[in-house]
Amino acid sequence: MNGYQNFRFSVFLTVGCLAKMFGPDGDPEAQFDYYARHLKFEKVYLECFRGEATPLDRLLAAKAFFEARGVETATAIMPSHVNAFDSSARMLCFTNPDVQRLFSEYIASMGAYFGEIMIDDSLATDCTCERCRKAKGDRSWSEFRTALMTDFCRDYILAPARAVNPNVRVTLKYPTWHESFQELGYDTETQPPMFDEIYSGTETRHTTYSLFRNPRYTSYSLIRYLQSLPPHNNRGGWFDSILCANNMNYFCEQAELTLLSSPREVTLFDWSLNLDTMFPPALGYFLDRTDRFLGELGAPAGVPVYLPHHSRGEDHVFDFLGMCGVPADPTVTFPDRPRLVICTAASCCDPDLTGKLKAHLLAGGDAVLTSGCLALLQDRPDFEFTAMRVTGRSCAGQQFGGFDAGWSTDVAYRNAEKAVSLPVIEWMTNENEFFAVQTQPGFPNILLARSWYGAGKCWVLNVPDDMADYSAVPPQVMDTVRKYLSRDLPVWLEGENDVALFPRDNDTFAVKSFLEHGSPALFHVRGSRERLTDLTTGRSYAPYTRLSRARQLFTDPGNLTLPVADAGVETVFRVPLSPLTLHAFRWE
Image (cartoon, rainbow, N blue to C red; front, side, top):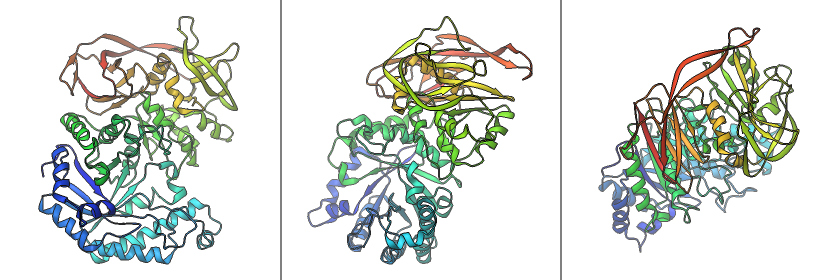
Protein backbone atom coordinates (compact mmCIF):
# COMPACT_ATOMS: atom_id res chain seq x y z
CA MET A 1 0.00 0.00 0.00
CA ASN A 2 1.06 3.59 -0.59
CA GLY A 3 2.02 5.31 2.61
CA TYR A 4 2.90 8.77 3.88
CA GLN A 5 6.05 10.58 2.73
CA ASN A 6 7.71 11.32 6.06
CA PHE A 7 6.72 8.44 8.34
CA ARG A 8 5.24 4.97 8.33
CA PHE A 9 1.78 4.45 9.79
CA SER A 10 0.69 1.21 11.44
CA VAL A 11 -2.35 -0.12 13.30
CA PHE A 12 -2.35 -2.50 16.27
CA LEU A 13 -4.75 -5.46 16.44
CA THR A 14 -5.25 -7.03 19.88
CA VAL A 15 -6.24 -10.61 20.61
CA GLY A 16 -9.83 -9.37 20.80
CA CYS A 17 -9.57 -7.52 17.48
CA LEU A 18 -8.35 -10.66 15.74
CA ALA A 19 -11.17 -12.70 17.26
CA LYS A 20 -13.78 -10.25 15.94
CA MET A 21 -12.19 -9.79 12.53
CA PHE A 22 -11.25 -13.40 11.76
CA GLY A 23 -13.78 -15.23 13.92
CA PRO A 24 -16.92 -16.98 12.58
CA ASP A 25 -18.89 -13.71 12.32
CA GLY A 26 -16.02 -11.52 11.16
CA ASP A 27 -15.88 -9.59 7.90
CA PRO A 28 -12.19 -8.86 7.35
CA GLU A 29 -12.71 -7.44 3.85
CA ALA A 30 -15.18 -4.80 5.05
CA GLN A 31 -12.99 -3.85 8.01
CA PHE A 32 -9.91 -3.58 5.83
CA ASP A 33 -11.74 -1.44 3.26
CA TYR A 34 -12.89 0.96 6.00
CA TYR A 35 -9.36 1.59 7.25
CA ALA A 36 -7.90 1.72 3.74
CA ARG A 37 -10.37 4.50 2.80
CA HIS A 38 -9.17 6.77 5.58
CA LEU A 39 -5.59 5.87 6.55
CA LYS A 40 -2.44 5.01 4.57
CA PHE A 41 -1.31 2.18 6.81
CA GLU A 42 1.66 0.10 5.69
CA LYS A 43 1.96 -2.22 8.67
CA VAL A 44 -0.11 -4.01 11.30
CA TYR A 45 0.84 -5.54 14.64
CA LEU A 46 -1.00 -8.83 15.25
CA GLU A 47 -1.13 -9.60 18.96
CA CYS A 48 -0.50 -13.18 20.03
CA PHE A 49 -1.17 -12.80 23.77
CA ARG A 50 -3.06 -10.45 26.12
CA GLY A 51 -4.06 -12.48 29.14
CA GLU A 52 -5.22 -15.10 26.66
CA ALA A 53 -3.74 -16.33 23.40
CA THR A 54 -4.69 -15.86 19.79
CA PRO A 55 -5.02 -19.33 18.24
CA LEU A 56 -2.09 -19.93 15.93
CA ASP A 57 -4.28 -20.70 12.92
CA ARG A 58 -6.12 -17.38 13.37
CA LEU A 59 -2.86 -15.49 13.77
CA LEU A 60 -1.40 -16.99 10.61
CA ALA A 61 -4.63 -16.40 8.70
CA ALA A 62 -4.50 -12.72 9.68
CA LYS A 63 -0.84 -12.55 8.66
CA ALA A 64 -1.62 -14.00 5.23
CA PHE A 65 -4.65 -11.73 4.79
CA PHE A 66 -2.74 -8.49 5.35
CA GLU A 67 0.40 -9.51 3.49
CA ALA A 68 -1.72 -10.44 0.44
CA ARG A 69 -2.86 -6.81 0.41
CA GLY A 70 0.63 -5.36 0.60
CA VAL A 71 0.65 -4.68 4.36
CA GLU A 72 3.68 -5.66 6.43
CA THR A 73 3.00 -7.72 9.56
CA ALA A 74 4.65 -8.03 12.95
CA THR A 75 3.45 -9.74 16.10
CA ALA A 76 3.13 -8.44 19.64
CA ILE A 77 2.64 -9.63 23.19
CA MET A 78 0.96 -7.75 26.02
CA PRO A 79 2.29 -8.96 29.39
CA SER A 80 -1.09 -8.61 31.08
CA HIS A 81 -2.31 -10.62 34.04
CA VAL A 82 -3.44 -14.21 33.70
CA ASN A 83 -5.93 -15.25 36.36
CA ALA A 84 -4.47 -18.72 36.54
CA PHE A 85 -1.17 -17.31 37.77
CA ASP A 86 -0.83 -16.83 41.49
CA SER A 87 0.11 -13.24 42.16
CA SER A 88 -0.44 -10.70 44.91
CA ALA A 89 -0.31 -7.87 42.37
CA ARG A 90 -2.33 -6.40 39.52
CA MET A 91 0.62 -6.94 37.18
CA LEU A 92 2.48 -10.14 36.39
CA CYS A 93 4.98 -11.67 38.78
CA PHE A 94 8.15 -12.21 36.80
CA THR A 95 9.77 -14.43 39.42
CA ASN A 96 6.95 -16.92 38.79
CA PRO A 97 8.30 -19.94 36.83
CA ASP A 98 4.96 -20.26 35.01
CA VAL A 99 5.28 -16.70 33.69
CA GLN A 100 8.86 -17.32 32.65
CA ARG A 101 7.85 -20.49 30.82
CA LEU A 102 4.90 -18.79 29.11
CA PHE A 103 7.09 -16.00 27.75
CA SER A 104 9.78 -18.37 26.56
CA GLU A 105 7.24 -20.50 24.71
CA TYR A 106 5.28 -17.67 23.11
CA ILE A 107 8.34 -15.66 22.15
CA ALA A 108 10.02 -18.70 20.58
CA SER A 109 6.82 -19.61 18.73
CA MET A 110 6.36 -16.10 17.36
CA GLY A 111 10.02 -15.84 16.36
CA ALA A 112 9.48 -18.78 14.06
CA TYR A 113 6.69 -17.03 12.10
CA PHE A 114 7.40 -13.28 12.30
CA GLY A 115 10.37 -11.05 11.61
CA GLU A 116 9.49 -8.60 14.41
CA ILE A 117 8.03 -8.96 17.89
CA MET A 118 6.70 -5.93 19.80
CA ILE A 119 6.58 -6.13 23.61
CA ASP A 120 3.69 -3.91 24.74
CA ASP A 121 3.97 -1.56 27.70
CA SER A 122 3.21 -3.79 30.68
CA LEU A 123 6.62 -5.42 30.92
CA ALA A 124 6.60 -4.18 34.48
CA THR A 125 5.65 -5.47 37.89
CA ASP A 126 4.31 -4.27 41.21
CA CYS A 127 4.35 -7.77 42.73
CA THR A 128 5.30 -8.03 46.41
CA CYS A 129 4.67 -11.76 46.88
CA GLU A 130 6.81 -13.86 49.21
CA ARG A 131 8.98 -15.06 46.33
CA CYS A 132 9.63 -11.47 45.19
CA ARG A 133 10.30 -10.23 48.73
CA LYS A 134 12.85 -12.99 49.24
CA ALA A 135 14.56 -12.28 45.91
CA LYS A 136 14.59 -8.55 46.67
CA GLY A 137 16.59 -8.92 49.88
CA ASP A 138 17.99 -5.63 51.14
CA ARG A 139 17.61 -3.81 47.83
CA SER A 140 14.98 -1.16 47.19
CA TRP A 141 12.03 -2.15 45.03
CA SER A 142 13.45 -0.04 42.19
CA GLU A 143 16.84 -1.74 42.40
CA PHE A 144 15.32 -5.19 42.58
CA ARG A 145 12.76 -4.72 39.81
CA THR A 146 15.09 -3.05 37.29
CA ALA A 147 17.60 -5.90 37.78
CA LEU A 148 14.81 -8.50 37.63
CA MET A 149 13.34 -7.16 34.40
CA THR A 150 16.75 -6.72 32.75
CA ASP A 151 17.50 -10.38 33.44
CA PHE A 152 14.00 -11.41 32.34
CA CYS A 153 14.39 -9.57 29.03
CA ARG A 154 17.69 -11.32 28.37
CA ASP A 155 16.70 -14.85 29.45
CA TYR A 156 13.01 -15.17 28.61
CA ILE A 157 12.48 -12.80 25.69
CA LEU A 158 15.63 -12.16 23.66
CA ALA A 159 17.36 -15.52 24.11
CA PRO A 160 14.41 -17.73 23.08
CA ALA A 161 13.48 -15.43 20.18
CA ARG A 162 16.99 -15.39 18.73
CA ALA A 163 17.52 -19.09 19.34
CA VAL A 164 14.68 -19.80 16.92
CA ASN A 165 15.33 -16.90 14.53
CA PRO A 166 18.70 -15.09 14.78
CA ASN A 167 17.37 -12.34 12.51
CA VAL A 168 14.19 -11.57 14.43
CA ARG A 169 13.86 -7.96 15.60
CA VAL A 170 12.47 -7.42 19.09
CA THR A 171 11.05 -4.01 20.03
CA LEU A 172 10.29 -2.85 23.58
CA LYS A 173 7.54 -0.28 24.02
CA TYR A 174 7.91 2.10 26.95
CA PRO A 175 4.77 3.48 28.64
CA THR A 176 3.68 7.10 28.95
CA TRP A 177 4.48 7.21 32.69
CA HIS A 178 8.28 7.69 32.58
CA GLU A 179 8.48 8.97 36.17
CA SER A 180 7.44 5.48 37.36
CA PHE A 181 9.72 3.42 35.11
CA GLN A 182 12.30 2.30 37.66
CA GLU A 183 9.79 1.64 40.45
CA LEU A 184 8.06 -0.97 38.27
CA GLY A 185 11.13 -2.40 36.56
CA TYR A 186 11.74 -0.45 33.35
CA ASP A 187 15.46 0.30 33.04
CA THR A 188 16.35 3.08 30.60
CA GLU A 189 20.05 2.31 31.01
CA THR A 190 20.27 -1.45 30.43
CA GLN A 191 17.26 -2.30 28.25
CA PRO A 192 17.57 -0.06 25.13
CA PRO A 193 20.97 -1.55 24.15
CA MET A 194 19.56 -5.07 24.57
CA PHE A 195 16.65 -4.58 22.17
CA ASP A 196 16.85 -3.91 18.45
CA GLU A 197 14.61 -0.88 18.90
CA ILE A 198 12.37 0.77 21.48
CA TYR A 199 9.03 2.52 21.16
CA SER A 200 7.24 5.32 23.02
CA GLY A 201 3.71 5.40 24.41
CA THR A 202 2.44 8.88 23.53
CA GLU A 203 -1.22 8.31 24.47
CA THR A 204 -1.81 11.32 26.74
CA ARG A 205 -5.58 11.08 26.04
CA HIS A 206 -7.91 13.61 27.69
CA THR A 207 -5.55 14.84 30.39
CA THR A 208 -8.31 16.12 32.67
CA TYR A 209 -9.70 12.62 33.13
CA SER A 210 -6.68 10.40 32.50
CA LEU A 211 -4.73 9.20 35.55
CA PHE A 212 -1.35 9.51 33.83
CA ARG A 213 -0.71 12.92 35.52
CA ASN A 214 0.84 14.55 32.50
CA PRO A 215 -0.16 17.35 30.10
CA ARG A 216 -0.61 17.02 26.36
CA TYR A 217 2.99 18.10 25.62
CA THR A 218 4.09 14.64 26.83
CA SER A 219 3.10 13.23 23.43
CA TYR A 220 6.15 15.13 22.16
CA SER A 221 8.54 15.11 25.10
CA LEU A 222 8.50 11.39 25.92
CA ILE A 223 9.83 10.47 22.49
CA ARG A 224 12.47 13.19 22.74
CA TYR A 225 13.61 11.72 26.07
CA LEU A 226 13.67 8.12 24.82
CA GLN A 227 15.48 9.25 21.66
CA SER A 228 18.27 10.57 23.89
CA LEU A 229 18.90 7.15 25.46
CA PRO A 230 21.94 5.32 24.05
CA PRO A 231 22.04 3.70 21.54
CA HIS A 232 19.35 6.16 20.31
CA ASN A 233 17.12 3.45 18.82
CA ASN A 234 13.60 4.76 19.48
CA ARG A 235 11.64 4.01 16.31
CA GLY A 236 8.20 5.43 16.92
CA GLY A 237 5.26 6.58 19.00
CA TRP A 238 1.94 4.94 19.81
CA PHE A 239 -1.35 6.65 20.67
CA ASP A 240 -5.04 5.75 21.04
CA SER A 241 -8.52 7.26 21.27
CA ILE A 242 -9.29 6.23 24.85
CA LEU A 243 -10.96 9.08 26.82
CA CYS A 244 -11.02 11.22 23.67
CA ALA A 245 -14.64 10.76 22.57
CA ASN A 246 -15.65 14.20 23.84
CA ASN A 247 -12.72 16.04 22.23
CA MET A 248 -11.49 15.08 18.77
CA ASN A 249 -8.57 17.51 19.03
CA TYR A 250 -7.20 15.66 22.05
CA PHE A 251 -7.06 12.53 19.92
CA CYS A 252 -5.59 14.02 16.74
CA GLU A 253 -3.04 16.25 18.45
CA GLN A 254 -1.48 13.13 19.99
CA ALA A 255 -0.52 12.20 16.42
CA GLU A 256 0.65 15.73 15.57
CA LEU A 257 2.86 16.07 18.64
CA THR A 258 4.22 12.55 18.18
CA LEU A 259 5.19 13.40 14.59
CA LEU A 260 6.92 16.63 15.67
CA SER A 261 9.44 14.52 17.58
CA SER A 262 10.59 13.04 14.24
CA PRO A 263 9.82 9.33 14.68
CA ARG A 264 10.12 6.94 11.77
CA GLU A 265 6.79 5.26 12.56
CA VAL A 266 3.54 5.97 14.41
CA THR A 267 1.01 3.38 15.56
CA LEU A 268 -2.71 3.64 16.26
CA PHE A 269 -4.15 1.42 19.00
CA ASP A 270 -6.39 -0.43 18.34
CA TRP A 271 -8.22 -1.66 15.22
CA SER A 272 -11.59 -2.60 16.78
CA LEU A 273 -11.67 0.36 19.16
CA ASN A 274 -11.67 2.81 16.24
CA LEU A 275 -13.53 0.78 13.62
CA ASP A 276 -16.56 2.61 12.14
CA THR A 277 -16.00 5.64 14.39
CA MET A 278 -15.26 9.30 13.71
CA PHE A 279 -11.59 8.83 14.65
CA PRO A 280 -9.99 7.31 11.49
CA PRO A 281 -11.48 9.87 9.05
CA ALA A 282 -10.38 12.77 11.25
CA LEU A 283 -6.97 11.24 11.85
CA GLY A 284 -6.51 10.71 8.13
CA TYR A 285 -7.07 14.42 7.53
CA PHE A 286 -4.59 15.44 10.23
CA LEU A 287 -1.94 12.98 9.03
CA ASP A 288 -2.24 14.17 5.42
CA ARG A 289 -2.04 17.80 6.53
CA THR A 290 1.02 17.22 8.73
CA ASP A 291 2.78 15.07 6.15
CA ARG A 292 2.67 17.93 3.63
CA PHE A 293 5.06 20.12 5.65
CA LEU A 294 6.82 17.69 7.98
CA GLY A 295 9.67 17.04 5.56
CA GLU A 296 10.59 20.74 5.51
CA LEU A 297 11.20 20.85 9.25
CA GLY A 298 14.69 20.17 10.56
CA ALA A 299 15.59 18.21 13.65
CA PRO A 300 14.10 19.32 17.01
CA ALA A 301 16.26 21.91 18.78
CA GLY A 302 14.76 22.92 22.13
CA VAL A 303 16.01 23.75 25.63
CA PRO A 304 17.68 20.71 27.24
CA VAL A 305 16.11 19.46 30.47
CA TYR A 306 18.43 17.09 32.31
CA LEU A 307 16.74 13.82 33.34
CA PRO A 308 19.33 11.22 34.37
CA HIS A 309 18.56 7.51 34.35
CA HIS A 310 16.22 6.24 37.10
CA SER A 311 15.14 9.74 38.07
CA ARG A 312 11.94 11.30 39.29
CA GLY A 313 10.88 14.48 41.07
CA GLU A 314 8.70 17.42 40.04
CA ASP A 315 7.25 14.95 37.57
CA HIS A 316 6.46 16.50 34.16
CA VAL A 317 7.24 20.07 35.22
CA PHE A 318 9.00 20.52 31.86
CA ASP A 319 5.81 19.42 30.09
CA PHE A 320 3.84 22.17 31.83
CA LEU A 321 6.52 24.66 30.74
CA GLY A 322 6.24 23.23 27.23
CA MET A 323 2.51 23.89 27.26
CA CYS A 324 3.37 27.55 27.92
CA GLY A 325 5.85 28.09 25.12
CA VAL A 326 9.15 27.03 26.70
CA PRO A 327 10.54 24.49 24.17
CA ALA A 328 11.50 21.87 26.77
CA ASP A 329 13.55 18.98 25.40
CA PRO A 330 14.27 16.32 28.08
CA THR A 331 17.54 14.43 27.71
CA VAL A 332 19.44 11.81 29.68
CA THR A 333 22.74 13.57 28.93
CA PHE A 334 23.97 16.73 30.66
CA PRO A 335 25.08 19.28 28.01
CA ASP A 336 28.76 19.09 27.08
CA ARG A 337 28.91 22.72 25.94
CA PRO A 338 28.08 26.01 27.69
CA ARG A 339 24.41 26.47 26.83
CA LEU A 340 21.35 26.96 29.01
CA VAL A 341 20.15 23.77 30.72
CA ILE A 342 17.10 23.27 32.96
CA CYS A 343 17.55 21.11 36.05
CA THR A 344 14.55 19.85 38.01
CA ALA A 345 14.20 17.83 41.19
CA ALA A 346 14.66 14.74 39.00
CA SER A 347 18.10 16.02 37.97
CA CYS A 348 19.20 15.69 41.59
CA CYS A 349 19.09 11.90 41.23
CA ASP A 350 22.51 12.36 39.65
CA PRO A 351 24.86 12.31 42.67
CA ASP A 352 27.40 14.42 40.75
CA LEU A 353 24.93 17.13 39.73
CA THR A 354 26.67 19.92 41.68
CA GLY A 355 29.99 18.98 40.08
CA LYS A 356 28.44 19.10 36.62
CA LEU A 357 26.77 22.43 37.40
CA LYS A 358 30.00 23.98 38.64
CA ALA A 359 31.94 23.01 35.54
CA HIS A 360 29.09 24.17 33.34
CA LEU A 361 28.81 27.58 35.01
CA LEU A 362 32.57 28.18 35.08
CA ALA A 363 32.67 27.44 31.34
CA GLY A 364 30.14 30.24 30.75
CA GLY A 365 26.97 28.18 30.61
CA ASP A 366 23.63 29.05 32.20
CA ALA A 367 21.76 26.67 34.49
CA VAL A 368 18.09 27.06 35.44
CA LEU A 369 17.28 25.35 38.74
CA THR A 370 13.62 24.79 39.48
CA SER A 371 12.52 25.46 43.04
CA GLY A 372 12.34 21.69 43.61
CA CYS A 373 15.90 21.28 42.39
CA LEU A 374 17.14 24.16 44.54
CA ALA A 375 15.44 22.70 47.62
CA LEU A 376 17.33 19.44 47.19
CA LEU A 377 20.71 21.07 46.44
CA GLN A 378 20.79 24.09 48.75
CA ASP A 379 22.03 22.26 51.87
CA ARG A 380 24.75 20.29 50.13
CA PRO A 381 28.19 21.48 51.28
CA ASP A 382 29.44 21.93 47.71
CA PHE A 383 26.48 24.04 46.57
CA GLU A 384 27.63 27.68 46.23
CA PHE A 385 26.03 29.00 43.04
CA THR A 386 23.35 31.26 44.53
CA ALA A 387 22.18 32.53 47.93
CA MET A 388 18.53 31.97 47.03
CA ARG A 389 16.88 29.37 49.26
CA VAL A 390 13.53 27.54 49.27
CA THR A 391 11.90 27.90 52.69
CA GLY A 392 9.35 25.08 52.79
CA ARG A 393 6.47 27.60 52.99
CA SER A 394 4.08 28.62 50.20
CA CYS A 395 2.29 31.86 49.44
CA ALA A 396 -0.66 32.44 47.10
CA GLY A 397 -1.12 35.66 45.15
CA GLN A 398 -2.50 37.12 41.94
CA GLN A 399 -0.25 40.07 41.09
CA PHE A 400 2.86 39.49 38.99
CA GLY A 401 5.49 41.61 37.28
CA GLY A 402 8.17 40.94 34.67
CA PHE A 403 11.43 42.91 34.25
CA ASP A 404 14.35 43.12 31.87
CA ALA A 405 16.88 44.44 34.36
CA GLY A 406 15.91 44.04 37.97
CA TRP A 407 13.42 46.27 39.79
CA SER A 408 12.00 49.02 37.59
CA THR A 409 9.42 51.79 37.89
CA ASP A 410 8.03 51.42 34.37
CA VAL A 411 6.83 47.81 34.56
CA ALA A 412 3.14 47.08 34.17
CA TYR A 413 2.04 44.70 36.91
CA ARG A 414 -0.57 42.16 35.90
CA ASN A 415 -3.21 40.27 37.83
CA ALA A 416 -3.80 36.58 37.26
CA GLU A 417 -7.38 35.35 36.97
CA LYS A 418 -6.87 33.23 40.08
CA ALA A 419 -4.49 33.07 43.01
CA VAL A 420 -1.35 31.09 42.21
CA SER A 421 0.43 29.34 45.08
CA LEU A 422 4.24 29.37 44.88
CA PRO A 423 6.93 28.08 47.24
CA VAL A 424 8.45 30.99 49.18
CA ILE A 425 12.04 31.65 48.08
CA GLU A 426 14.31 33.84 50.24
CA TRP A 427 17.26 35.77 48.85
CA MET A 428 20.05 38.11 49.88
CA THR A 429 19.34 41.65 48.67
CA ASN A 430 21.58 42.64 45.74
CA GLU A 431 22.99 39.09 45.41
CA ASN A 432 20.68 38.31 42.51
CA GLU A 433 18.72 39.94 39.69
CA PHE A 434 14.95 39.64 39.40
CA PHE A 435 13.14 39.01 36.12
CA ALA A 436 9.68 37.82 37.17
CA VAL A 437 8.07 38.11 40.60
CA GLN A 438 4.83 37.58 42.44
CA THR A 439 4.04 40.65 44.54
CA GLN A 440 2.30 41.06 47.90
CA PRO A 441 2.45 44.05 50.29
CA GLY A 442 5.92 43.84 51.80
CA PHE A 443 6.36 40.26 50.61
CA PRO A 444 7.51 39.80 46.98
CA ASN A 445 8.30 36.28 45.88
CA ILE A 446 10.55 35.10 43.05
CA LEU A 447 9.19 33.54 39.88
CA LEU A 448 12.46 33.90 37.91
CA ALA A 449 15.76 35.33 39.14
CA ARG A 450 19.47 34.73 38.61
CA SER A 451 22.82 34.94 40.37
CA TRP A 452 26.22 35.16 38.74
CA TYR A 453 28.73 32.39 39.31
CA GLY A 454 32.08 32.63 37.55
CA ALA A 455 31.44 33.16 33.85
CA GLY A 456 27.95 31.69 34.03
CA LYS A 457 24.56 32.47 35.51
CA CYS A 458 22.57 30.35 37.94
CA TRP A 459 18.85 30.95 37.44
CA VAL A 460 16.07 29.93 39.79
CA LEU A 461 12.61 29.23 38.37
CA ASN A 462 9.80 28.85 40.89
CA VAL A 463 7.33 26.02 40.25
CA PRO A 464 3.68 26.54 41.29
CA ASP A 465 2.32 24.07 43.80
CA ASP A 466 -0.11 23.15 41.04
CA MET A 467 2.18 22.97 38.01
CA ALA A 468 -0.73 23.59 35.66
CA ASP A 469 -0.90 27.10 37.16
CA TYR A 470 1.95 28.21 34.90
CA SER A 471 -0.91 28.80 32.48
CA ALA A 472 -2.58 31.07 35.03
CA VAL A 473 0.42 33.40 35.35
CA PRO A 474 -0.29 36.52 33.25
CA PRO A 475 1.03 35.94 29.71
CA GLN A 476 3.03 39.18 29.74
CA VAL A 477 4.98 37.82 32.73
CA MET A 478 5.40 34.37 31.19
CA ASP A 479 6.78 36.21 28.14
CA THR A 480 9.73 37.17 30.35
CA VAL A 481 10.21 33.55 31.37
CA ARG A 482 9.99 32.40 27.75
CA LYS A 483 12.43 35.06 26.60
CA TYR A 484 15.20 34.24 29.04
CA LEU A 485 14.82 30.48 29.05
CA SER A 486 14.99 30.55 25.23
CA ARG A 487 18.14 32.67 25.13
CA ASP A 488 20.15 30.05 23.19
CA LEU A 489 17.44 29.37 20.63
CA PRO A 490 16.99 31.05 17.24
CA VAL A 491 13.35 31.95 17.98
CA TRP A 492 11.16 32.63 21.00
CA LEU A 493 7.45 33.18 21.46
CA GLU A 494 5.67 36.22 22.86
CA GLY A 495 1.95 35.73 23.31
CA GLU A 496 -0.62 33.80 25.27
CA ASN A 497 0.01 30.77 27.43
CA ASP A 498 -1.16 27.33 26.26
CA VAL A 499 0.76 27.72 23.02
CA ALA A 500 3.75 25.42 22.44
CA LEU A 501 6.82 26.27 20.36
CA PHE A 502 9.00 23.68 18.58
CA PRO A 503 12.21 25.22 17.15
CA ARG A 504 14.17 23.23 14.58
CA ASP A 505 17.78 23.33 13.43
CA ASN A 506 17.16 24.68 9.88
CA ASP A 507 15.45 28.11 10.05
CA THR A 508 12.06 26.54 10.70
CA PHE A 509 9.79 26.01 13.67
CA ALA A 510 6.36 24.65 14.49
CA VAL A 511 3.80 26.06 16.89
CA LYS A 512 0.77 24.34 18.39
CA SER A 513 -2.08 26.32 19.92
CA PHE A 514 -3.97 24.51 22.66
CA LEU A 515 -6.33 27.46 22.97
CA GLU A 516 -9.98 27.13 21.96
CA HIS A 517 -9.90 30.60 20.41
CA GLY A 518 -7.69 32.40 17.95
CA SER A 519 -4.78 34.45 19.30
CA PRO A 520 -2.01 36.68 17.93
CA ALA A 521 1.58 35.61 18.52
CA LEU A 522 4.84 37.49 18.13
CA PHE A 523 7.75 35.35 16.99
CA HIS A 524 11.15 36.86 17.79
CA VAL A 525 13.66 35.49 15.26
CA ARG A 526 17.37 36.15 15.69
CA GLY A 527 18.95 38.16 12.92
CA SER A 528 17.60 40.48 10.25
CA ARG A 529 14.93 38.55 8.32
CA GLU A 530 12.78 39.51 5.36
CA ARG A 531 9.76 37.22 5.64
CA LEU A 532 8.13 34.40 7.56
CA THR A 533 6.21 31.80 5.53
CA ASP A 534 3.51 29.54 6.94
CA LEU A 535 4.32 26.11 5.54
CA THR A 536 0.78 24.91 6.19
CA THR A 537 -0.96 27.65 4.18
CA GLY A 538 1.74 29.26 2.02
CA ARG A 539 0.98 32.70 3.45
CA SER A 540 3.97 35.01 4.01
CA TYR A 541 4.34 37.64 6.74
CA ALA A 542 6.47 40.77 6.55
CA PRO A 543 8.41 41.87 9.64
CA TYR A 544 6.25 43.49 12.31
CA THR A 545 9.28 45.25 13.78
CA ARG A 546 13.00 44.83 14.33
CA LEU A 547 14.66 45.07 17.74
CA SER A 548 18.25 45.50 18.77
CA ARG A 549 19.38 42.96 21.32
CA ALA A 550 21.15 44.41 24.37
CA ARG A 551 22.98 42.44 27.00
CA GLN A 552 24.89 43.27 30.11
CA LEU A 553 28.18 41.43 30.30
CA PHE A 554 30.87 41.13 32.95
CA THR A 555 34.26 42.15 31.61
CA ASP A 556 35.62 40.75 34.86
CA PRO A 557 33.59 39.16 37.67
CA GLY A 558 35.40 41.41 40.12
CA ASN A 559 34.60 44.65 38.33
CA LEU A 560 31.43 46.59 37.74
CA THR A 561 28.76 45.38 35.38
CA LEU A 562 29.23 47.30 32.15
CA PRO A 563 26.52 47.64 29.47
CA VAL A 564 27.80 46.26 26.17
CA ALA A 565 25.92 46.74 22.91
CA ASP A 566 25.15 43.44 21.19
CA ALA A 567 25.35 43.67 17.43
CA GLY A 568 22.55 41.11 17.17
CA VAL A 569 19.09 42.00 15.88
CA GLU A 570 15.73 40.34 16.40
CA THR A 571 13.12 40.39 13.66
CA VAL A 572 9.61 40.15 15.07
CA PHE A 573 6.74 38.66 13.08
CA ARG A 574 3.12 39.02 14.16
CA VAL A 575 1.02 35.97 13.22
CA PRO A 576 -2.61 35.14 14.03
CA LEU A 577 -2.89 31.56 15.33
CA SER A 578 -5.99 29.50 14.68
CA PRO A 579 -7.51 27.70 17.67
CA LEU A 580 -6.31 24.16 18.44
CA THR A 581 -4.13 24.18 15.33
CA LEU A 582 -0.59 23.16 14.41
CA HIS A 583 1.34 25.57 12.17
CA ALA A 584 4.86 25.38 10.75
CA PHE A 585 7.00 28.31 9.55
CA ARG A 586 10.21 29.09 7.71
CA TRP A 587 12.04 32.39 7.97
CA GLU A 588 14.20 33.95 5.27
